[in-house]
Structures are given as structure tokens and as C-alpha cells.
Image 1: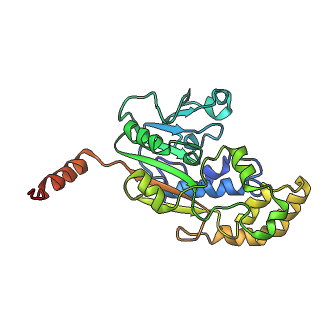
Image 2 (image 1 turned 45 degrees about the horizontal axis):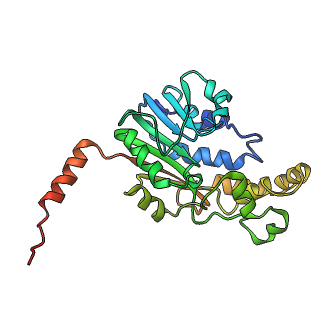
Image 3 (image 1 turned 90 degrees about the vertical axis):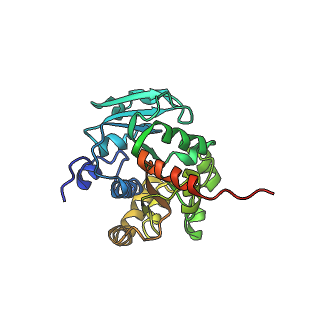
Length: 269
């Protein structure tokens, strides 16, 4: 089926911003596949990307929309992704968005919430600036994430705490229950990525091995990686997940208010 509003998956993947998309950047390619799977093919006029930094995935996914990329690091203003037509960069805080209520058709937070101390406020702000029936797209590590994934790789990898410090993580990630509790209601679409087969490629990419050694490992692991990549499905166990939520519209909110108001009031003594 041809997509009318979001890009076709092959075209989206062809612009993987991470270097070496079939080895070092395979994990990013997997994330892009998961994001594409949960992203609706709706007309989007204006989208806010929170913490888009230098990747610019939202403008690659919805090329016809006007994108506002807000990030704490003002140096990213000069990144190529933020100089694309239709993209505007804003230096700002995702927990205190400098935008009016209900002014965006969608908000994206790709690999962001695990970096934000006040994640609840970040989600609250995202829904504040979303119009009714707007879309929130999120990707984040889940309860299966660990580094390295397999015990035998520990001798070749930096400590997980060292990576967290380098990446600026303040938490490991979220289980489905945790992130749906954070948002306040169930996600409408979910897709996992980086499964127990493809995770080896991910772990090698961030290991202490030399570049040549990593290339050799990736070549040796390629049959396993291809199998894991090709047979990954939405229900496959992954170490990270992508989610989509639809902000309740005015009619839905009215129905919910009517249900609440029609409930009997407990008798008082």
C-alpha cells in the first residue's frame, strides 16, 4: 500500500542518519523500522520533535509537514537535519515548552524520556501542545534492555554505568506498564526492536574492540543478524519499544466526563 503522508519504508530507511547502517548503525535502522510501523499515515501539518538533536527522524518520516525541533543543546541548530526546508530549530526545554496549547498535530520523543529527570512533566507538556486527536510517538528502552545483553560480552564492553554517563541516561527505560502509567492510558500501537539476535550487533558497536575487530565480528555475525532482522515481528521480544498514543478528542473527553458524573455519589454518614 502506498503511503500518502508518511514516507515509504524503503525511502525512510535509506536516509538513516547513523553511519554504516548495516553494521554500526543497524540498531538505528531497527528503531526506524519500529517507528515507521507505529506512525500513522495521517495528514500532518505541524509536528513538534522534542530532543531531535542531530538526527531529524521526524522530518524524514513526514517530509510534507512543518517540523519544529526543540533541543537543550543550541549547537544543534547548525546540524544538516535542522537546515532542511520546513524544519525550524528551537533551543529549549522539553519540560517547559514555549508553545501555545493544542498547536501541533503530533509530538515525537524518540529516545528522549530516559534522559529526562522529570519525565512526567515532559509527557504533560507534550499533551498540552497536542491538539485533540493528535499523535504522540515515543521510542525508549524497555525492561529487557541491558548492556551488554549477553554475559560473555562483558570482557569486551565498557560498564553499563559508563555508557549511561556518556549518553546522559537518568534511567534504564520503561516496561509497557510503566510507560503507560506515565502517560495515563494505554498506547494504541506498539512495536519492539533490537531482539536477542540483532542485539549482538548493537553490543559490538559500543564495545571496546577496535574498528577492525568490530568489522570482523559484524561479518561473522551477519547470518545471525539477518535472520533476527528478517523475522522480527511486533510480538518479538525486543530490548527497546516504540509507542503511539492518540490524545483524546473533545467528544471522547465529554463522554468520559458524562460517565464520571453519572456515577452514584457514595452516601455519607
